[in-house]
Image 1 (cartoon, rainbow, N blue to C red):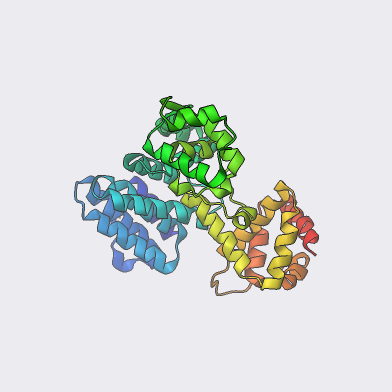
Image 2 (image 1 turned 90 degrees about the vertical axis):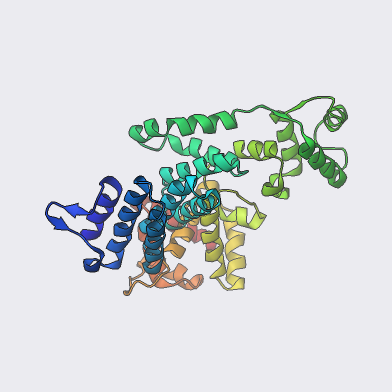
Length: 360
């Protein structure tokens, strides 16, 4: 109970007092100390004392030491947010960490963490801002009306970026297109006249529709996203349909600039690594034959399996219905059981079993 109270107190009140009772760190366990340090750090920064950042970092170290997901995410996020006016490079680093940990520990996205990184990336003009903008647009309808009102300016900025339909042609664009021509010949799915006009600056802008034609012709997986001209990054972001990064994207070698998606991808990579090679080969072959919804529930199970593969100090019995799959894929019992029960409804659990039958 004390951890929950301190967590609430650290985010909504000025000090750590409860009437006549004063709290100090000597009477707290490690989890409570995380939020105690967060509260000290926030209050110092609000009083223009930059040393408060050190308390936030101490909170993060404590949270990492005891693997406290909420503490890790919130401390990282606050370091990023309050560090904006002190050290922008550090702010970007911790903002990316906060969003990565959000994707690693939780299935449900935390919108305020996306928002923090969006503000930082906008300030540093990061290439990743386009993909993050699409994420924000996709997530916006799923948050409460109160949150929507609070973040409406961020949504407006995100939509404005994704609303671009024409882009200035600069040296970066022409050099990139020349490299594409060298590797793919003159056929980029656009006319030779268009290519000539773009490369010789006969036109000042290139249409987003033209860029999408080039992308679709060459294939997204053949692009290294972080080396693309910004207009290509924006157009690829527009093509994104959701925040999922499924196991087949690992097989195809797709790349993302979004730390949240990368965390989910890393969970799935780790899931595959845990299997012996001959089992993994069988698993991937069966997986690729699944439909989209079927893949989605396997992806969720894979992520949760790794999330729950930690030391619990107890053993959770595997449901009878999951025992044969635990043996077939060399899974550990406790994370299998927890990943199974982590699914929100009995219908989803039944769906998981139905899909796993196709792996036999």
